[in-house]
Image (tube, rainbow, N blue to C red; front, side):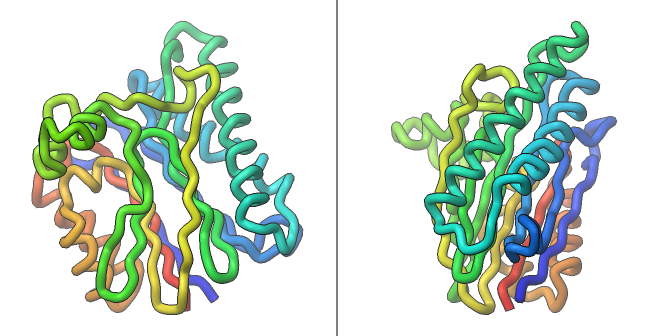
Length: 248
């Protein structure tokens, strides 16, 4: 059994929320999967909001069409990658319809949860975290300029959170003709959590704060509300979105 809850907020600086998220359970004609997706739009007020919503809707709809019961992780990975490619195409098609949408795009991080684990897919710098055994582990790798700098040793992970170019991503749905996604298999046991979130949370709430609030919260909604509160205490300059899932 799985519990899942999401939250999204415009933050304290932005005028519009360009993030989007969704959760679908018992999809694929009763196949029993739970699908979570978080997207963070970019490309102007109108474009960013549209791109993230197109991505969420298209990804879920197209994935649901190809899911069937008892698919193995590799098949789930292929299905998720296929849905990402169609979401990318849908955004590019919409961008060609109006000059105001030119260059719009979005990140995407998703989890297809099956019994015993999840297939995680990401494009851009929205993240997935795994919380187990009292520890928090980042599952995904950011496709961003600062991530490359961290990996080269030019800056630390903490410096990356405050770097002036932290919002420059190297992969996204929309701008890229072929959106290349990464994927990961994350084992999940009873009592463990998955957290999907946009960089608005990552840049204002530390991993340790995430861990503390998730383990301390009696309800998923309580944990998410507290994480949003911490983000706002730190200024919340961007939209903040998170989906928290627990295996019971």
